[in-house]
Image (cartoon, rainbow, N blue to C red; front, side, top):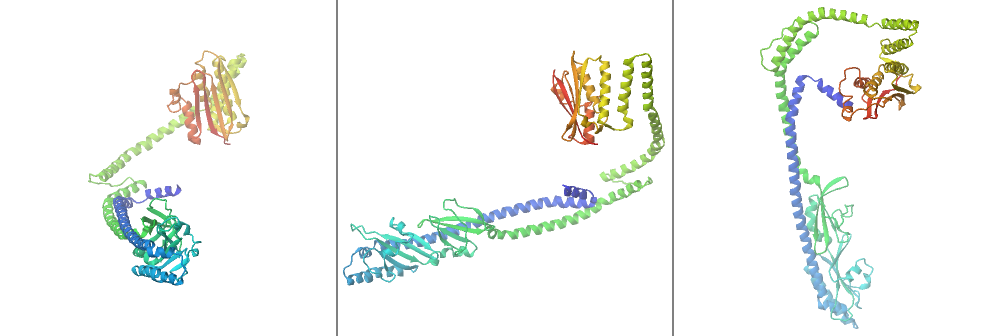
Amino acid sequence: MQSWRRLRHHIRDLKFQTKIKLAFLLISMIPVIVLGGFCFSETRSLLIKQSKSDLNAALNQSALTLNNQLEVYNKIMNFLSFNQSIVNAANHTYTSTFEMYDQLVNVIDQNFYTARNLNSGIERLTLYTGSNLHQHGQTVHPLDDIKAAEWYPDVMKTTQVLWFSDDTNMYCVRRILNTKQKNPKKNILFARVNYDGLFAPFESLEAQGSEILIQDAKGRVVYSSEHGQKHPTFRAADPSHVEMQWNGQNFTVLQTDISTSGWKVYLYKPTGLITRSAWWIVSTVIFMIVACIAAVAVAGTLFSRKFITRIEQLRNNMKTVEEGSLEVNVVSDSKDEVGDLIRGFGNMVDKTKVLIKKVYVEEIARKEYEMKALQAQINPHFLYNSLSIINWRALRIRATDISEMAQLLSTFYRTTLNKGNNMILVSDEILNVQSYMKIQLIMHSNSFEVEYQTDEAIFPYHMPNLMLQPLIENAIIHGIENRDEGGKIMLSGKLENGCIVFRVEDNGIGIPPDRLSQLLESPSKGYGLKNVHERAKVMYGPEYGITINSIVHLGTEVTLKLPAGE
């Protein structure tokens, strides 16, 4: 808040010529910045959309290539699994070593060799059999070798080709089912394919800064371009991502599916790489802004210098007047506002010369005479002496009521005038109110009751004088006097949360709601509630002053709140 105020004062104190330059710059910069920001935002948005579209097309193309390769491997696995020669060889119980050798070499080896030659991506083909075929290199192994594998139960539940990965190894597995035998043997066809060759379609995307993550249907990582490093986690149930933040960096994310294997492919690329091509537009906009600032600065300097010349002449003339000399020559034939200002100043100086003698010589002398006369009139000693004579003579003729009235008036005016001081002790203010109240009781023939409940703890404090008497007067005139009989006024005063709180309550006729809302706002003819309220707010702040509560036909409560100060 203080910094803002200092900045406002600094701007206010700048030279007018500088303010004109700054105004030129501000007015010119607003459209430049708005249009430049809009262009950059729209261009960035279009680039991101286009890049996403290109990335999505490239991702789908790579995924399609991978899917086609997987279908080729699946067809090879299905072909071998349905090859009746291989099925018979895997389900036969051998009694002759020659017969077993013949099946291994001429059936299984021959077919596996042909399949591997047809697709160089197959690195290994193995038949895991439950028959009594002996282990034969990498071609035939007993089924017991893989029963502990994690994927074994899943393979035995289906006849589909299933894909599994292990670090940088990729496998496809299929159960060989013989429908011609009543109790066929358990046989599984296993193939290991070239890992790098299988995922080669994604190399072009990785070369452009994209990262690839492939997960199977259970969320297990099949392939990651970061090769064992930490990567973001994607849940298969989630919809396709658009934006994400990972490792303190924003990424654009795309997703596609591999239908053959049920895999999900995620591509995530730093958004900064996508928007990098927009920076040349930013550079162009910045250059244009700088050029506009320079042009406006030059134009503003020339314009303000031409415009300010006459104002500076007027300012110099004003300084001469400030120094006490009215002998200045200010002339201008221009018809614009500055010319009017110069001519107006010249007329003002001329009229000042004429008026200064009258005001200084005649008016000041008259005011001094009036002040002396007023001071002679305000002499409290004359009032006190007069009341003392009335009291003395009343006592001589034994007129006690006149004596009491004179004493009450003497006390009331002594505390009211308070030797010219604005502040008064709370005890003296209450004494003033009590004197005033007794005078009112005498004037009203004791037709109402008065009750005081003032805490002596507030007596040593000071408060502005003549604050309570208007409240009492208002309660009598507008409340009690309008009752037929049985009027009562109560004055209370006490300390509440570091404040002195006075309450004046009466059981008068009350105040209508429409009048109550305007009571402290509308002007009064005398020193009424509004004056007391405004005086308290001016002296102590808006949280102090008067609050009024009233119920029609029941009475009114006026509360005065002041700070407790010594």
